[in-house]
Amino acid sequence: MNVIFYIIIFIMGTVFGSFLTLATYRIPLNENITHKHSYCPKCNHKLNFFDLIPILSYIFLGGKCRYCKSKISPRYFIIELLCGLAFVCLALMLQINIETITIVGILNLVFGILYIVFLFLIAGIDKENHYIDKRVFIYGIAVALIYWIYEFLYSIDFNVNRIVIYLAIAIIVLLINTYQLKKKGKDNYTLNVVLLCIIMALYTNEVVTIISIITTLLIIAIDEILTHIFNKNKKKKRKRITEQPIAFYLCIANFLVMMLANFIIV
Image (cartoon, rainbow, N blue to C red; front, top):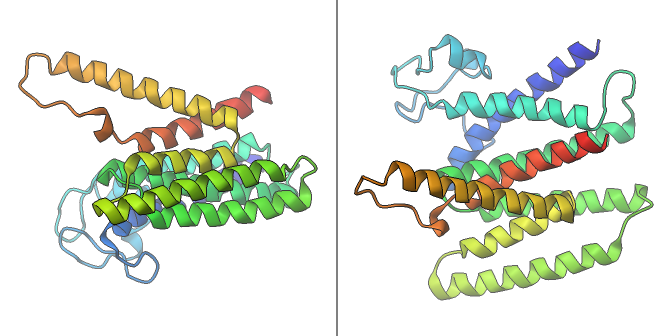
């Protein structure tokens, strides 16, 4: 029965992953992500039910659009698969199964899923467009507020002072970023990364966030070294550190560190 339970969790994750691929594509284009029917970005043909089955549609269609035969980016398949696996890892981390499932466990799973959605949205948009969308931040902060209320009602270790301090820092960062936006006409990417770290610290904890930051810096350093090695004899312009998708790496690192830390503790 537990195997069936985790298969259901995986399928649910792939469905969320399918929606996230749509959202990460449409949000930067300011397109509706809930009411507008799914379509092929190459030929604009509306997709039917059999074109939208997570993972399976990509496999059976051979990674091509049914209508125009254009190649479908493998990121759709990858995100759906990774999201399904992430949901299963979350359930295992929370030790939720048929025998142990409770109302509190379900609530923790729901908040965990909402956080994973936040990470996937930030990572997906940053990887493709190198910016962090404010609407995703608003979603993350809104979920965080609901989570704090939940923690305040049910947790004996809830620290109000910690929340107040983080909120004050977040407000200061937002004010500075707003000033930068008015002055230069665009968001400050670095300040957005700082705000992302604050939200991560609130959802997880300071230790996990710090390790995530260190891991991100290591990933960027390794990427820089490998790029230098492979492009040493090529006249190819290297990316500057500021051009790296830092939020993308940070989200991946945060999820992995959070999972590993909880599994090790367990």
